[in-house]
Image (cartoon, rainbow, N blue to C red; front, side):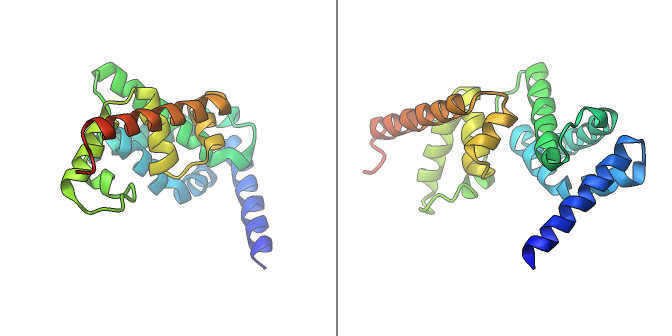
Length: 184
């Protein structure tokens, strides 16, 4: 039963994408609507404020509409959209020379076991010290819940590199935690 519903959903999305590729705006909107919250969430993680995140989502929708013919595989529509969001965010951050910071709200959603504020602040500070590449992998994999394969596709890096970057970032975090005498 569930498989049939999923199959029907995939077929519907594929039909809508074909129509959208031919310029059907209604079909395009129907393709985008299920993913708007995901696009906003991802944009907010990078941009850190509602206004910039909304701007990024709007820019993403416009770019996706303009580049709809470049989508090769309808099954990867969501991944394609998320990749556009990330690229726009990184471009905006690079232009404004902002650094990605993690605020307390985001940190709380990282499933940190302890509710100790100092623990959260320490972890927030440690994550902010990672390189942009390491932060991106950590945020996508642990915060957004993407697999390493999806993370590597979104960041346009080989799968092994994504895993290595994550391992290296976690190793750095462990060392930094020990240095700050984290558990005492």
